[in-house]
Length: 156
Image 1 (cartoon, rainbow, N blue to C red):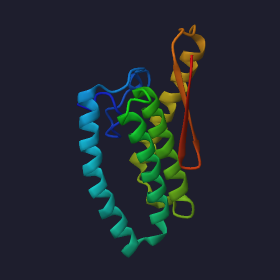
Image 2: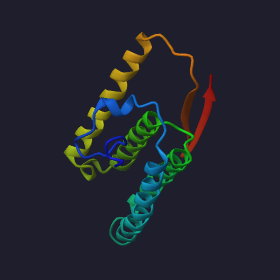
Image 3: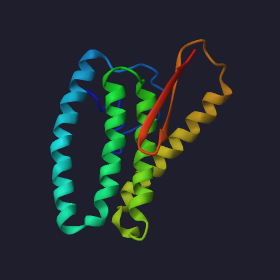
Image 4: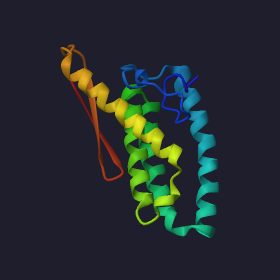
């Protein structure tokens, strides 16, 4: 249910996910909570593995998880739209890749780098298209990262 709207990182993502101005429906928010709860279990496996075999990675994973949680909470309460959540997810993943590859260039697989580059190209193309369109009179939510904290403001 969620993979049709949220960025899935599975190679099936399209630019259309970056132009969805609607929040998740109630059923989608419920599904998101379920997925998030399962993801929390997976995170523990990642952290446990890194603590034992690659402790240098742990802070980067924790920062990624913190940013992911910030996006999750705002999306789950309907504070941000799907397009905003997808853009923030792409930005967060890009920061993670940059951080984790400093001094360890081989840690991110080529396919993951390619998917990130495609996602960022979608964002840039979408921004160019949006800039050329007249702006509708509706509420817009703008979000920025302040460290790993998500700061969102709504403007009309």
